[in-house]
Length: 478
Ligand code: UN1
Image 1 (cartoon, rainbow, N blue to C red):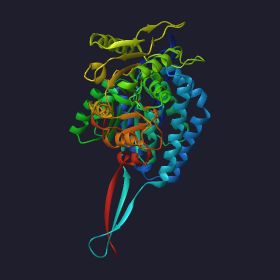
Image 2 (cartoon, rainbow, N blue to C red; image 1 turned 60 degrees about the vertical axis):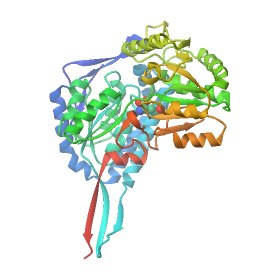
Image 3 (cartoon, rainbow, N blue to C red; image 1 turned 120 degrees about the vertical axis):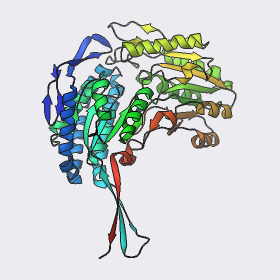
Image 4 (cartoon, rainbow, N blue to C red; image 1 turned 120 degrees about the horizontal axis):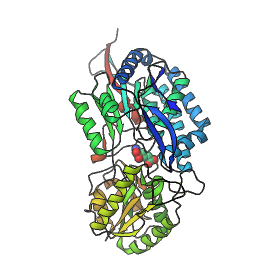
């Protein structure tokens, strides 16, 4: 089945198509998704600009009803959409079902936020004057989304953009156009006016490039790798466009000697290996107090051995395949790098064969590693984690902060004092106590520090910082 792009309220065919392949079974083609040409992206931008003034003036009720309707349809079709997501991305059905539910709730959350666009009224410092601070939409927003959350990330960028009265041009990752197409279809049928939301599948070098450099795009929100994010920032800065970037992580999970070991193992297993380690919030650095190092490694190794790596949609699978050949090559390359650097491969790290031909890899755990090794400095984005032993809490905190990233961090401890100290002193945008570093709520801010993020936070009511602009009005009392 072929799928066109949504441009100016119409489904427009392209000249060539992306072949969406199932990473659990490379003989299974999920679908063909047309690529938008540079000219078609032009049309999408014109359509979005034309639609903007009227959409910006719609009442909050109109926007709330539309977004709520979208959330309701996603929820009603949760099973089917989760199956599509698991099939094109490779996360397990349970993980995909969670993600689709999250996408639905995000639309419902921002449906209500449309009714609560914040503002303020203050007295002036001068007599007889009122000051009113309002938030207005920005205009046309270019959204560039990654392959690892094929519906949740398009949802968490699109929903606030629309709630606050902006128009959207979305470029989803070429590896997973299916979920984004399904979302576009739902938005279209919900009755969004033509041009308010546009879908343009295609290459970064064609479609992404245009969204970043075209003056008709007022703001760009991107989730993906650090080099691509930095490139977007430079080009967008040249023309003064607003930018929001969510990039990589090298998230530390600290396990202290006083930790409950079952909790430590469960939290490390989830954070490092679930969703095949393909989360920017994954905990790839397991920083463990020497006193419990052996016990922790024994527990985690045993837990990893119990995992079932197989077809994402097969019952019993706990870890799906890697998303594609090039990501698998990268993961395996880092396993080699780790070995060359002198890290001990405790288990896993090899390619696996299953009944169907897919990109299967055994979760890899390195032990005896140092924080200055490349495997502990560079984001791998696969099922690979390292244990770094430290002598005490102070060293654990220092190692946790010794990184160019700052997205998320975690600590497993029964000490209230150390947990509180860690929360205050860790240099990350999010911090978890006795919980996995990955897996976040949809109604609170998401984002990091240092090299992980740039610009205002995503999600929750903090999303208004990016998706609106502030106006300060001075009015003389008559
Ligand atoms: C999560 O951990 O629940 O790309 C969300 C990513 C993040 C989302 C993580 N932007 O992995």
